[in-house]
Amino acid sequence: MSDYQDHNRAAWDREVERGNPWTRPVTSQQVAAARRGDWRVVLTNQLPVPRHWFPPLAGSDGLCLGGGGGQQGPILAAAGARVTVFDLSPQQLERDRQVAERDGLELTVEEGDMGDLNCFDDDSFDWIFNPVSNCFVPEVRGVWRECARVLRGGGVLMTGFANPTLFLFEEGDESLVVRHGLPYADSEALPAEVLAERRDPLVYGHTLDDQIGGQLAAGFQLTDLYEDRDPDEALSRYIANYLATRAVLTP
Figure 1 (cartoon, one colour):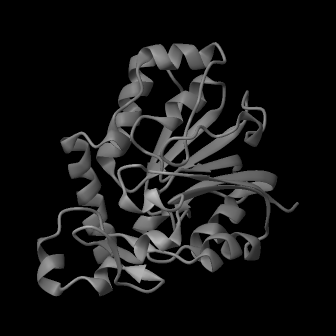
Figure 2: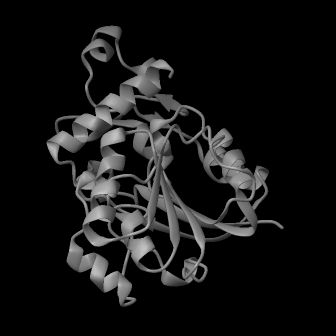
């Protein structure tokens, strides 16, 4: 693994130990509700993904990309899909294993970096569900190319990502201060002594040209988009700080 992969793998394992909200598994009650057709999942912070974004789930093959944590994967499996959860963090994947064993779900987990899906054959999936996670990889266009390779023609890519403006600012005493340009990388913006002590995941800010233009260049057609906010981040007072897109792979 590369330096960033080693760092973020260990960092997300620590996030599981800390009880980060995105590492807390769904309950058996939520799984039971999903089996009855009552379910919701998120790509961003708060807003549920519109149900019409999904193809019919029963019997479909889906990939939860960068989606470990025992949350979206088990719900979508309970709703009838054949789900594979792919994540860099072994502890995040262990959450999915625990839920699957607890609730009798058929769920596959695979460990790896989202920019390299070579463990999957071409045309393996009907849909990909990618909650906010590409901010933890330095290059995102390769992610979209891999998504296009493993999706079947007409397959659906649903992804959430940070508004690029989020990476421009640092919080001052009473305001936001512009400090950085785009694209952004912790590994370049932070002093060496800070990086040496850092235990949180390394973060990368991608441009809209790479986020949306990259999907189009990989062969996707954008069909829908919405914005969302994380109220814990100061920027959300001024602008929606996350986006979600739905795109379809051109047959």
